[in-house]
Length: 78
Image 1: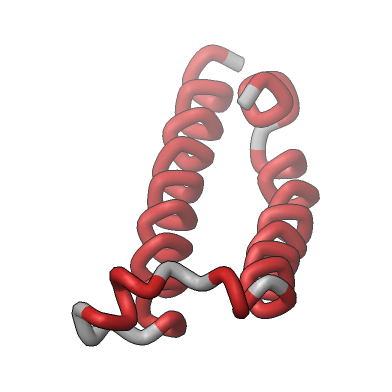
Image 2 (image 1 turned 180 degrees about the vertical axis):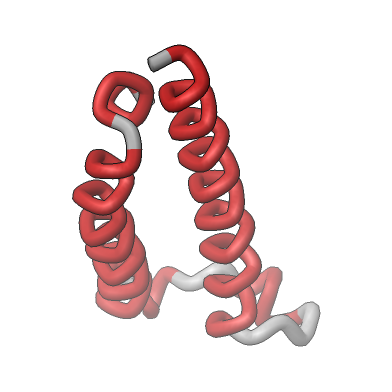
């Protein structure tokens, strides 16, 4: 967040591909170790794809919200 506060929108644009690569790494890691899946969610009827979406979408929304707020603060005091 320090980079977003100090550099503004440029840091957000540069950090976005890193965030996406993190999601790809997360899905790859979960797929690679699929034999150790959480059977609790399978038994409850929740698919792994839905579980990934339920964890990645709020994370991205929170990241976007914090990034927009920090860009707004940066532009307000610049």
